[in-house]
Amino acid sequence: MDGGTEEHERLVASVEESTSRSLVPVPVVEPGPEQDEASVDGRRSDVDEWGRSQSMRALARRIYDPIYSKWFRVEWEGLENIPTEGGALLVANHAAAIPSDAPVIMHGIETELGRPVYGLADNFFKRVPVVGTLWSRLGGLPAHPDNAYRLLKEQGQLVLVFPEGSKGPAKPFNERYQLRRFGRGGFVEIAMQAGVPVVPIAVVGAEESMPTLFRLPHLASFIGAPYVPVTANMLALGPLGVATYFPAKFKLRVLEPVTFNVPPDQERYSRSRVMDWSEAIRDRIQNALYDMLRNRRSVWFG
Image (tube, rainbow, N blue to C red; front, side, top):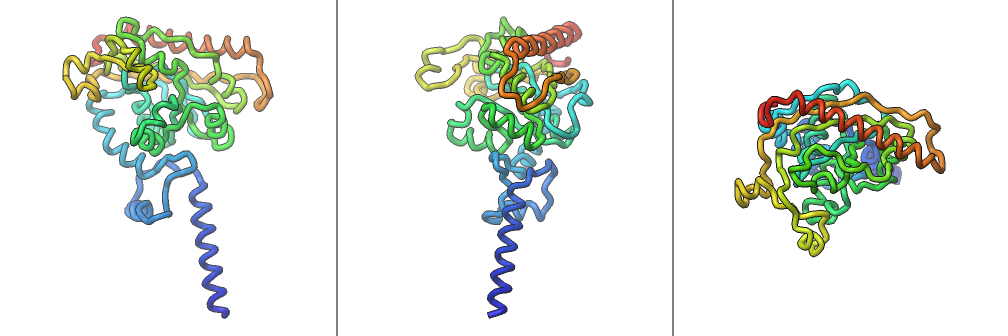
């Protein structure tokens, strides 16, 4: 009888330990052999509450690193402006028919600073079979204010958003590096509520990696997609061009964090103040892009 009771208590303790482990945010580290075995062992999963998998991110970093370092040859400026701890909302310009900027930013910050980055995107990607699951496993989730707030305020994570939305990557090549309107400033309000800084990031190179020549709006409406582009990559590379980027040189400039002198968790914030800050942040990124483009010698070599 006593032996059965002890065995039951050991089982309960094991379950409680496993459950508590699954609820703790997982740091970005390369999994060792023991972690690899654990990730395969049934319910001993490394998938967090958002669907992000540590082992999948580690695999993605190994696969993606040659693209990052050899194909795009990414250079960063101002990485010290990204906090090494606590929540921060990363805000960047958005481009390429299939956006190339999100994986570059997420990979770069994870490898350079050792911090995970959660990327918010249009819910369309979540609904696409296979792609939606992969996006979740790699740290992506639907762009909903509640998701952003919990990650920033409650969990102190880095969250990446693109306020241009689908209007950024959908714009034609002759309008490259001309930022679209930053919506209604929702990202500013979320940062105010969560009490975290906004860190603007200017990205040069994504526009040329997969430039949109024109769009097919009727087809986009039919399949329920934000846009359906025809790209220079498709014309140059045929079927391979659907998912193959040109080797444009990427340069990223992290600007000084923007903080808001307002108390967090207010029910409402001044709409005019939110919009003023949104436009000011947009202007900072736009001016940084113009400066970077003036100093760029070549699309391919920087």
